[in-house]
Figure 1: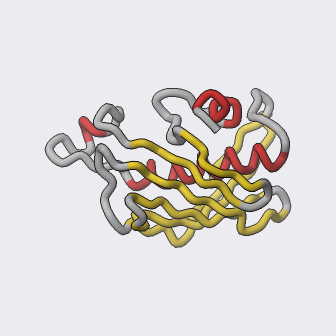
Figure 2: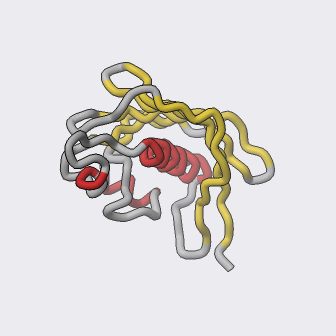
Length: 145
């Protein structure tokens, strides 16, 4: 799935799209996606000017965006102006190595369970085959009042 199709399944837009490509997706199961990290990211000038490191919360956000794509594809729907896909929680978040410009994040997210509209996922982000972050995440699709 290229960026044009990804934008059909994410409500996010620049500068907050953190998934560049989907390598594989199995409905109701898992997604493997890519975030290419470049020096042009808007957060690097401030985090940190002399040693740029991708903020860990944005790595988890990239995992959550991959999870959103998986969920929308699984539900057979797309984001719209009548609902929002919210982060509902995170557990067991770990950051194992810094992510720097030039790295390619491989985002692996699997559905753990779906219960009463709450989607629970397990995710890990890898660079060069090594896990740099992992998290258990919960998301929910809510109607906009």
